[in-house]
Structure formats: structure tokens, C-alpha cells
Image (cartoon, rainbow, N blue to C red; front, side, top):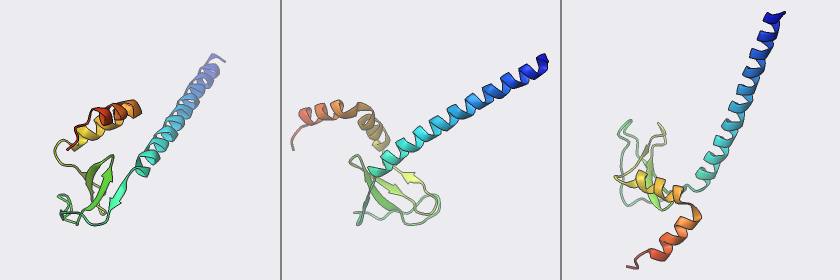
Length: 108
């Protein structure tokens, strides 16, 4: 009898973990959809680069003001030096940080 209770308890723990995994997978999917909505394709890039992985011509996209190169074949995304840090900084700051950046930006 005690063995049955233990198996039932283990089953309940597994069900709870599965529900938690499903919840977080859905949250991740929502976040990715929001980020993909901000991705804009650039029709004519100033440069033509080839994928270092598979040598296919890269497609250019803008994301949060940064130019990204993406391979349509292998799905790789290639960034220039400092772009990843810039994207992370811009996304993590939020709307208030973006507003402060606009206020303190130097006008060229």
C-alpha cells in the first residue's frame, strides 16, 4: 500500500513538472514571437557577405537599429563586433532607459 502511495506521489510530481515545462515553453514562444515582430528585412544591403558556415549569400535584417546578417540556409545569424552587447543593452534597458538615451543622445 505504501508503495502505491509513493508511485502516486511521484506521478503527481512528474505531472507538476510537465505543466511547469509547458508553461515556460509557451512563455518562451511568446517572447520569441514579439522579438521576431521587431525584425525587419533590408532589401538592398550596402555589402554582400557570404555565410562562413555554408557559403550562401546572407540576408540583411535590422533589429532594434542594428544590422544583422542571417543565412537562409543554415539559419545562422552573424553580428559585427559590439552588436550583440548593444542589442542586449538596448533590450534590457526597457522603455525608460530608451527615453533617457534619447534625451542624452548627441545630435550630429
